[in-house]
Image 1 (cartoon, rainbow, N blue to C red):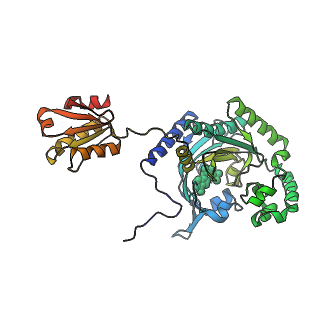
Image 2: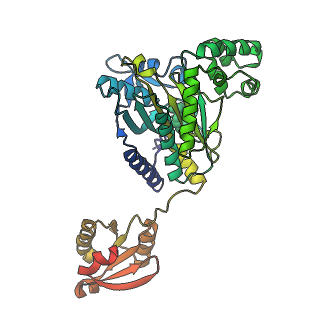
Image 3: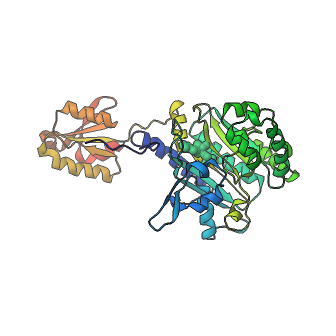
Length: 419
Ligand code: AMP
């Protein structure tokens, strides 16, 4: 029969790579404890309207990439393409916002779904770790959020990362910028792709983000939003930069950096790695001071980011930054024949009770073949149980790393192996 394979653009994660995932996730959780962010888990499926309103109906995500379907109750639902809209929905629905301080801080880790053209580092189901911070316009909060992303990547030993920073203004300064951008882009219309032609009037900021080579080339001299910031936005941007400087987070101002989602205001940032190919962004985010109210909540400033776990895994592997995971199995218990397997099973249970990661051989084979299995598992010790061992109450313990062997009494076994 033909084998059934996974859906295109969706991948399985298993040993040994899954240990790297666990390592990344546990580092994230520990860092989130340090920064006093609480986890939030929202459903994978939401009403389609949430993303149309939250992410923006002019975005590629909403226009082309959503997994949307009608459920059995004739409701249009969507598998979440990103986390922010869901978190905002949840905090509005359950009144999770503090008014003022302490600032409400959340994080999430989970799968997202986008119907994109799959390639290395771009999947249709991918995992994001995201942070959302509500209730403050303080530039220190912008710096804190960028620091979280930077710290996590640094603690994962990723080097050659670059923090790109920009401000994309607010509803006060954007119209002025739009006017001058529209004028500029209308003058070079024929050099831009079809989609960017539409963007001239709908969303000129996105033209800076277009991957088409001719658009990239021909927007080099275009006016940038940084030059059009209102005093409030430019003052805020200066303070964010100063706060980052004060805690030693290196960054580069990239006046062309925009974000793919409509809801951003003011600070926008992205962290890239030189150890990735074309899809070089490890994570990105920014401020979204109007989203909470646009989704029916109180007017609440907010900032967040999302980091792609697949890309972090690829960058760590490319950089050989993976920790040494050997030693996952400490002891491999080998009964030499069926007669010893009952005794071995009890011994295995005692080892596990003492929290020693262990496994037992369950088929009969030659000792040499058992040792090979133990090595495959990465076990540190093989505990050999034959007729004599049971008779004498002394087990043969082979140290698989330095190839030595010792007779150890049953009562001393756990201490010996732990040692
Ligand atoms: P975004 O939500 O588009 O701002 O993306 C934030 C981060 O999620 C990116 O920097 C990537 O690391 C990751 N990401 C976004 N889309 C994908 C995808 N299709 N496959 C894998 N990772 C992705």
